[in-house]
Structures are given as structure tokens and as C-alpha cells.
Length: 371
Image (cartoon, rainbow, N blue to C red; front, side, top):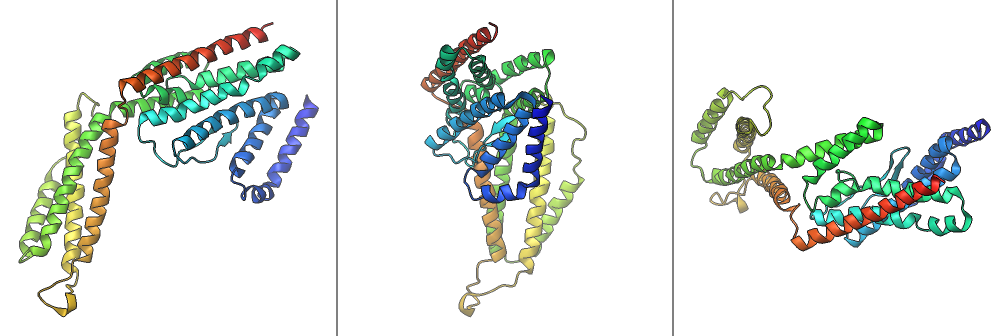
């Protein structure tokens, strides 16, 4: 055992010292990142558990991730290459945002489904050879994908059940909390924290929508007002008006201290309104000063045809871009998790069926290993 570990460590040291050379070869490959991270993970697992176990684990994780990639491709969503992280699995990131939770659930379902298919060949191999290694592959494959089906975001199960109701995430968090209490581990703690943050963010989406709506009103007011400036007979009155508004806002005292969510949302919203009032008031004042200093140009030298202000045009463009972002965020908050009843039933049946099959294989693998 010591000898094999020494050999593995020597190989690892060689790879690390020649990492630049290895990266130079892999960077021309589309799957270079995946391949390199896979090799590193394979080596890391092999140091502690041996090559056979490492190869089986990396293979199962790889097929699982490819299930996500294939599902994303079918939906026309670009993804990053799969990246392996030793003792934490692997991940892919989406370059495009799914249009709704149903699409995200489809992408999430592809991983555990492919992961189940990955270990099915181990069944006939075990029946033929009675080698405990194939029983381990069945058990490990079922365990990995069954764990991923836990209804906690960001696990696949959490993304799938979000079509049904994001309230299910809380049930998943309770279940994972019980598991953590009995068998704590750094990876599970990390998943629990991310899941808790995601669940809480979902709970606060109503309040977030309220704040965005207020900012949207500010943006419309900002666009309307700057459109009136070129028609002012004199900018002096507007300057005085803006100064008075700034003075009033600066005198307003924001609510200080911690405010309890839900219980003190009225005070919190008042504070957020004041914050946005100040942000857009100062933005308006800074823009006004720039516009005043901007030299007036005329079309073809005609004093009755002034050219449109470049400063105001740029400000209008930025405000329109922000308005589009706010509208998109508000639309997403109100429609992302909505789905017809027929879709919910399909997702529920598919989720429970896959969970049941994986549970059966998990218990079967346990039985084989216990012989």
C-alpha cells in the first residue's frame, strides 16, 4: 500500500512540475479543461481509494455531467465544459439563463437519468463475474444520483421540484440538516448553506419585486424629465429646483439598525425608497451640471436647429438599458416558477419514478455488498 502511494505521489509530482507543458497541449482541445480536471481528480481519488474505485467514481460523475450537457443542448442552452473538483464532484455552468423553471428542471433531470444509465452495465457484469467491484459500482452510482435528487437547490432535485413548489426546498433542508447532525461533512455543510441562501432568496422575491417596481417608476420619471430639459427657456429655475430637492433628501434620516424581514418590511421599504431617491436625485443633478456645461452645436450652422445633446442621449441610453434589466428581473420574479398543471404532473411522476428506481438499485447494491 505504501509503495503504491509513493508511485502515485511521484506521478502527481511529475504532472505538477510539467503542468505548463500539459496545459499547452490541452488548451487547443475543446475538452481540455474537462480532461485535465478529470485526470487530477482521478489521481486524487486513487491516492486514497485505489485506481479501480477512482476510475469508477470519475466515470459515474462524468456521465452524470454529460447528461446535463446533452439536456442543455436539446434546449439550445450553451454550457461551459465540465470541471472536476476532487472530493466535491464536478459541475458545469450555463452560459444562457433558462427561460423558466420547467426548462431548468429538464436540464437538471438529465444528470441523474444519465447517471442511472451509466451504472446499468455493471448489473450483467456482476451477475456474470460475481466480482464485488461491480456491486460497488451499482451502489455508488445509485447513491450519487439519489443524493443529487434531494429537493434542495442547487442540487438537481431542488431544481426539478421547483416546478412543483419551491416550498419543498424547506423539507429538503430539514432532511439534510438531520443528515448533517448524524454525519457532518464539509461538502454537505456547503450544500446546506447554499440551499439555505437560495430558499431565503426565494422567500424574499416579493419584497425584491416591490423595490424593483419603485426603481422602475424612478427610471420612467428620470427619462421624462431629461426629455424636457432641451425645451427649457432658462436652466436657472431647474437648477434651483434640483438643489432644493437634494437638500430635502439629505436632511431625511434613514431608519438605522437591523430590520426583521417580513415583520418590519414597511420600515425596510421606506429605507430602500430613500436610498433610491438619493441615488437617482444625485444622478439627475450630476447629469444636469454636465448638460449645462456642454457646448451647444447647431445643424448646418442654423441657430434655430440645435443638435441633440450627446450627454442626454448617452444618459437616456443607459437609463433605457437599466429599465430593460429591471423589467426582465420583474418578469422573471413573477413568471419563472409558474407552470401549467399538466407540466407539474409530468415532473412529479418523472421525479418520483427516477427516485424510486434509484432507491431500489441503492438497496440492491447494499445487499450485494453485504454478502
